[in-house]
Amino acid sequence: MKKDKLEELLRAAGTESLPAAPADFEGDVMRAIRAQPRHQPVSLFDQLDALFPRLATASVVVIACCGLLVLGSAAFGESSLTDKVTELSEQWFFAAN
Amino acid sequence: VSDDAEILDRIRNGAADEFAELVHRHKSQVFAILYRYERDHHKLEDLAQETFLKAWRSLDQFDQRAPFNHWLARIAVNVALDHLRKIKRQQVEVSLADLGDDALDWLHRDGKSDLDARQAAELLALAMRELSPTEQVVITMQELEGHSIKEICAHTGSSGVAVRVRAMRARAKLRRALERIQKETADKRVRTLK
Image (cartoon, rainbow over all chains, first blue to last red; front, side, top):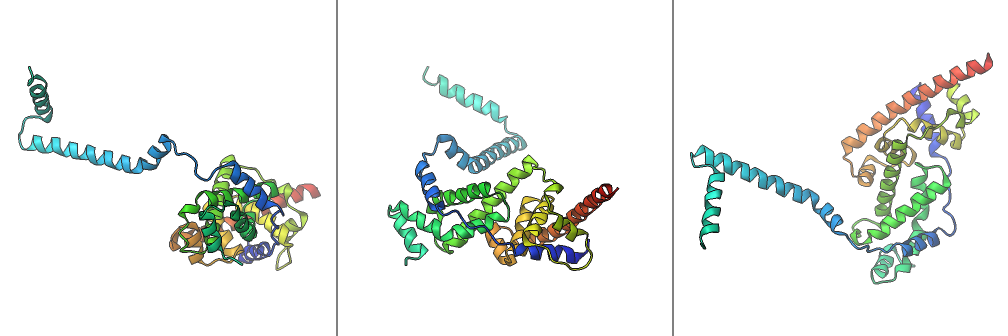
């Protein structure tokens, strides 16, 4: 295929006359708009969907912080984090008794 | 005569019916953009209506930093892109038989010769099926609508490098598609003559 052939085709296609919009097109659009209100109620799922990237990033940050905390406490020879949490919750639960 | 900004202000103040005036002013531009991607008149009308409905729904987001017609053109290009992606997924088969004889004669003829604009557009639409939706939009805006790289970037939200690469790829693919069509129709012609 010669390079000129494609250029010629593009040039010819570019001169095609474009169709006119139908006369009552504005009416059709306005009828469609009236049938479909501009401010549609936003559902809970839509809101969660909109927040998704932020929620996902926040979750990754929290998980990473927890991971670092566990690794840090293990590296400094502290007793494991699970033991500490268990100890604290026992103190809290049984403090009243 | 009010300009677009004045009409938009009135719409924001509750005169929703004024949107019809904006549709009237810009419908030709929207039809012109979308016709490059959809040649069926009923589907074209649906796409144009979808463009204006999207504009209506997101009028609150239009900050008037750019002219209204630029913003609307961007919405129309996005509607066209979504449409191209949809028909790409459906893998619509376009038959070579749909092409006119003049287009095929032109394709097989050596040297420069005239081709009717409509037949050229149909042949090009067939070759365009080989392109990705974004490549179709870039080559259409650059070659058929005469937009600059900067304008294409503004309408599509792509970088200048991405637009240049897509335009180059699109040209290579179009050339290969035309070669394939030429070969397939040549074989058919030989069989018909036998």
